[in-house]
Amino acid sequence: QVQLVESGGGLVQAGGSLRLSCAASGRTGRMYHMAWFRQAPGKEREFVAAIRWSESSTYYADSVKGRFTISRDNAENTVYLQMNSLKPEDTAVYYCAATTFTAVPSRTGSYDYWGQGTQVTVSS
Image (cartoon, rainbow, N blue to C red; front, side, top):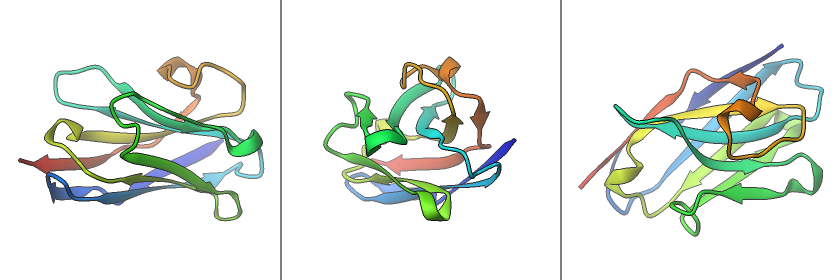
C-alpha cells in the first residue's frame, strides 16, 4: 500500500507562486502514475495535472496550462506541482493521487491512492 502526504500549500496573493510536494511511502518501488486534483468548497473535485511513469508524459487541465507544471523525482518518491501566476479561482484543497494501471488521467476514478490534501488560498 502507498501513503501520500502533500505539503507546500499556503496563502499567496494573486500573481504569486507556490510549489506543492507529494511524498510517497510504502510500496514505492512500483511504477506509479501520479496526479494532482483540487476541490473548492461546495464544488466537485477536479483534475489539475498528471504525469505518467513511461516517457514522463504530462497532462494538464485547460485552466492551468501555461501556469502549472507537474514533475517527479522517482529516486526520492516525490511528485511536485509548481504553480505560477496564481488566481483567486485556484483556491482549493489540492490532493495528490497515484495509480499503477493505465487509465484516463483526468478522472478521479482512475486513482487508487489519495493524500489528505493541502490548502491553497489565493487572495485578490
